[in-house]
Image (cartoon, rainbow, N blue to C red; front, side):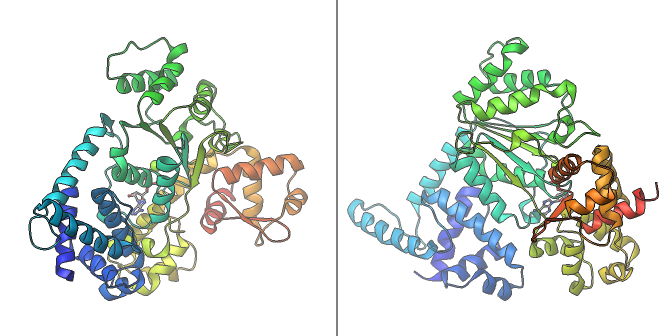
Length: 459
Ligand SMILES: Nc1ncnc2c1ncn2[C@@H]1O[C@H](COP(=O)(O)OP(=O)(O)O)[C@@H](O)[C@H]1O
Ligand SMILES: [Mg+2]
């Protein structure tokens, strides 16, 4: 088969599946992989980042797998297509149907994709994503590994309660929405809610029950709503996202504790994990609660994905969008701002506004620059901390060294148990780094430390 035939074949599959023809970068990836090149080589040849090329590949293999009903990836792409061609050639001889991979009609594959598409769209009977963000795949970078992890937990391991956790701005909401965009046909019902906008658990339950039970089923009084909800989760395959779960946690206490009016959520989350059903609830939160980790993973299908910053190539893609001038400093910028896509957006805007598009000028300032928007995010985190945590972060910020529990005991007027619980709570807020040497040491991220020095230590 010539490369032109492969590209034509791939184009038809992609068009039948997504309604769009192959773009230049997709063609380059298919060509490169067919010729046995690595993603790294392909990336160099077309002057793109390796992570971008990997993402394009990931999407292509997914489309091909779904269209052809076979698991296709980079390493088996060529052999599978060649095998299918041989099989189809022999089926042409048997059935005399009009089908080949070349320039002729491709009836069967188009029919197959159309059938599978009809089946796919027919599968989702209800979706309400009205308050979920719209993600443009062109501007979604990296996270290939994380998308695979989510697919594995949610689609293959049938996780019932999945938490996606991490600092504000790290990309939790975006990642989950991208996962949904890629996998929506796998579910009967998909609903996205944000706990910032929900008044009470009662109103959430009533709302979800109304949406899921399309049959105008009577909505029961609140006591029995849990049971009715769990019953619906077992009858249909639902994916329910609850974003910004940290809003139901109390301030000035350790992380992940429910506000008094929201304690029933804890029972709901436990019931979702412990009851037999075929659905998945995804919790997105900046704070980790006890219910988000399984005491016994074998017994209860609970998983959590703790998000870190974007890798270098994905971070650089974000910086590139701002058309800053001095590319040599982009990597450093991504490292300073921890690959946090929101921090990168803030800092690139500042560089454009004040430093004539030159990252080097901002870096030359010497001090870490905390933008006003970052300060507001850190203010919110600081205000949510308990007094014990505040004492601990103040001590760590004042020290030039990383500190051990012993160091903290000597310098804070806190009991051992307070220090240990305080450290655990800070970890559950993703604000504390743990350095695992012989003696465990603790530090803050340089940015948060800088915030503490500038805005909290004068108080
Ligand atoms: N993988 C990504 N590629 C490009 N931009 C991203 C990515 N993840 C997040 N962003 C951007 O970063 C910002 C913060 O992401 P968001 O998902 O809202 O963070 P979180 O929910 O963790 O607070 C958004 O503007 C989003 O578009
Ligand atoms: Mg979010």
